[in-house]
Image (cartoon, rainbow, N blue to C red; front, side):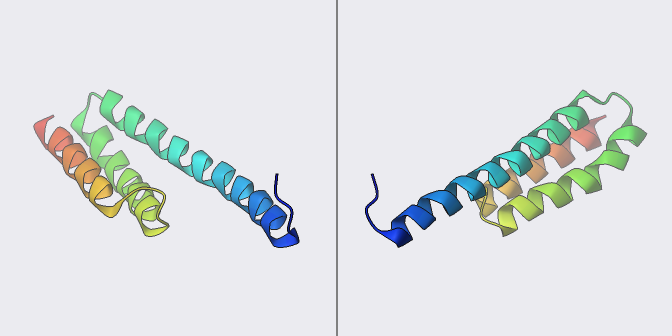
Length: 83
């Protein structure tokens, strides 16, 4: 257990940040799942910019690695183009 005031605050703040990061990562994963479940090309093209923006935001805030974000975007674009 932490003994210093600053260490206790760090534990509190990192727990809060962890919840925040988990929320946005899960929301993005659900959006990716919905995009992959779409069967019409027009629907997928409508969802693609929103999902790409969410992925970019995760990479910008270091929730996921930028290369991981690039790979996800690339695979999603390939999927949409193949419809």
